[in-house]
Amino acid sequence: MARQVSSVPFGYVPDNEREEARGSLWVYDSFRDYGMQQLLRVVGLAEQRSMVKIVFYPLHEETLRRMGEKGAEPYYRRADRLEELLDEADPLINTHIDLWEGRRKKYTPMDTAFRFLAEKYKGPHFVYVTVDMANTIAAFDSFEEWIKKLRLFIDMKLSPSAALHPKLEAYVHRWDAVE
Image (tube, rainbow, N blue to C red; front, side, top):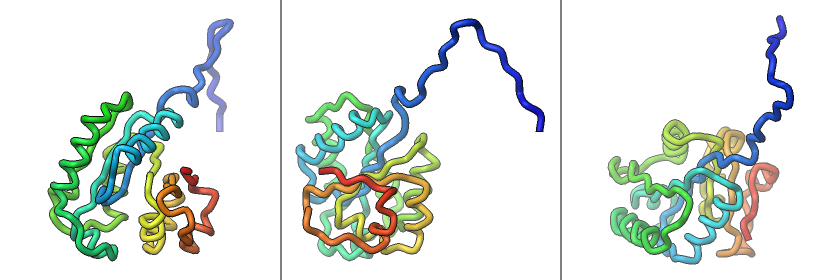
């Protein structure tokens, strides 16, 4: 294979791509008991890692029911409360609430949701989840495929003593604990 020769002016220093803001952080959660403290932790993490956008993805009550969470509040009530919380916090980073699952009005598997988010938002992709949600998504068959494509941030503060799923233990190099 032939080499591609390029020339640059004397003194040229390439831009460091790592210093630029990049990637999107998906917050994949029910947002049932979400408060200002959790929101500020997510925004702080995104600012610290210099991400371009935070995408909040509230899960439909049918999806939550299939995941084992009983008695979930209606989808639009949780989404409206999240929107009010974002308006109150007024973060400096670009935020968006993706209401695709609310328009579907039915169960959406994690694989389908992640594929939709990956096509819609610019990479690299990061997912912020609680320990319980991380254990739930690790139980899915498609978890091993997705853990290779994205990086997890697991919020350990809400339940620090919770046991982790064996697949999470196997892929410990692909996720970070958020204390």
